[in-house]
Amino acid sequence: MIKKFTRFFQNFFTRFFQKRKDLKLGLYGPPNGGKTTLANRICTDWLGQEMGAVSNIAHETREVQVKEHVEIQSKGKTLKFNLVDTPGIATKIDYEDFMKSGMQEDEAKERAKEATRGVVDSIKWLDDMDSVIIVLDATKDPYTQVNITIIGNLEARKIPVLIVANKIDLKKSDMKRLEAAFPQYKVLGISAKFGKNMDDFYEELFKLVK
Image (cartoon, rainbow, N blue to C red; front, side):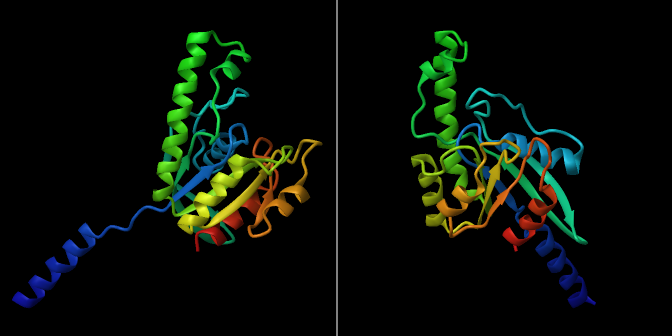
């Protein structure tokens, strides 16, 4: 009787203190690639609510945002994770670029400081990521220092990666160019804004985190 009682409490405390670590799925990429738009699409599809603000001004997302307990389904399977939307990574942030969008100098300088802190935080959070989706603008040149920096950091940490070529609804989008730039990775074309190819995207998530 005592042995059963002891075993019961051992099992109870083992389950209590050894909770499974929540899977963290990070959205990374340069500014204005569509990370937050994709985050909003995922959250709207599965939670019925958006995650954050979207803007045409670069570095709208300046702090790491986390949506916990996202649960998606595909072909009878269920995947649960915490979705992490990170600030756009840039190798140079100039306050004058914000002034060109209509900001006053003081506001532009403050935005540049916040954006710089956001980039540092994005890199720090990589150590917590289980898998990463790199969101790139399919209309832009993929051969940039920013993309090389992101890929290099992920390869060094051996984090599973899916590259998403966003904005394929635009005429200037070029999937072949992105596929040629990153032949070692799966590249999936989507339009987060209009929900194009999202079913394929969700299927790829299951492969990414297996």
